[in-house]
Length: 184
Image 1 (cartoon, rainbow, N blue to C red):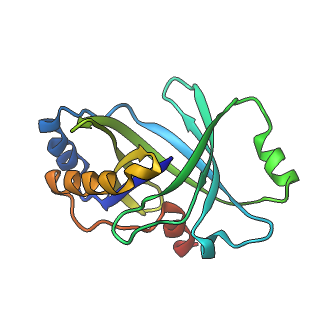
Image 2 (tube, helix red, strand yellow):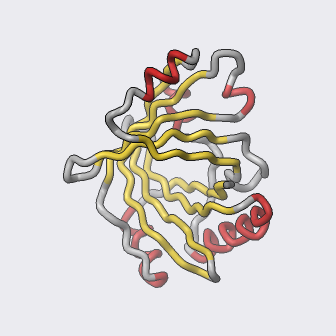
Image 3 (spheres, rainbow, N blue to C red):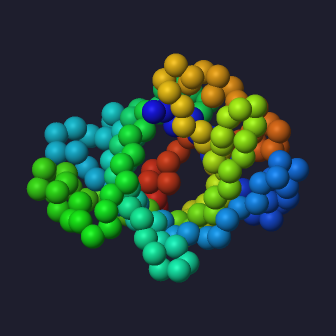
């Protein structure tokens, strides 16, 4: 699968939520996410524009879910379109130990508070999220959809069109990991 995504800095979360109302989108409850990124034993993911992480998502009721995610290099200059492979993990298994036994080294942990909504438009499902990052890194809106490789171009245009419809401007392609690395 390919993830087609755009990210935008948001000055006012309440203004962003108001922009979603005409589309019938209400963001869900806040969820805390912890993304443990890993370094590859023989190649530099920063140079290859790849990422490997384990995401731990903690809900307000204390329940959790975990995912192992590989993200490939970005494929176009306007969006963050990239190959994504995501596997849901059992929470009680030592996945970190498996990766380190294979030579992967823990890099940084990125934390955020995320609220997610879903939008159906023209036969396509979009995730719309609002992320609040710690350390004054900011608040961001993301629009994303998952597609097969053959649908990347149509999905890319659909994400660009939705960004315009939501009056989102000044997209950024920098990952949260890259932002955190700049301040540490």
